[in-house]
Length: 168
Image (tube, rainbow, N blue to C red; front, side, top):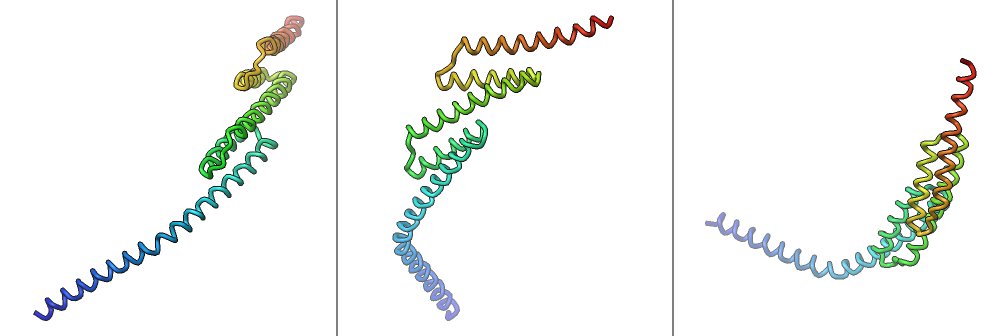
């Protein structure tokens, strides 16, 4: 009987200890939650600032796809921090697409000079899609660039045939 009473006493003491620990933990969680929320908000704002810095750097130094990824990361981080500005996002997106349009025209010209017509066409299509995205697409300019590409292809093909025919 003593063993049974001893066992009940231990179980009761353990139960009371658990109840006390739980109630103490709940009482301390309230200020901790408040501190955790402030720390979390501070961390989110810090992440948004870091994402903003990376976006600015990427817009200056990197290409379109890494810029687009940085733009999306900044948008998400700023939204989580509560500092997202749609107008600022639109301005960054415009800068990104304008840079891509200019880069596409440069690469188009370089690939024409290098007689790499496949890649020149890729640059031309990128220019077309991104200028449409910004609403500055010019059909006449596109047709002129397309004609330049076609002329370069056919002109090069006829140059290759002429020496071969002269040798026969």
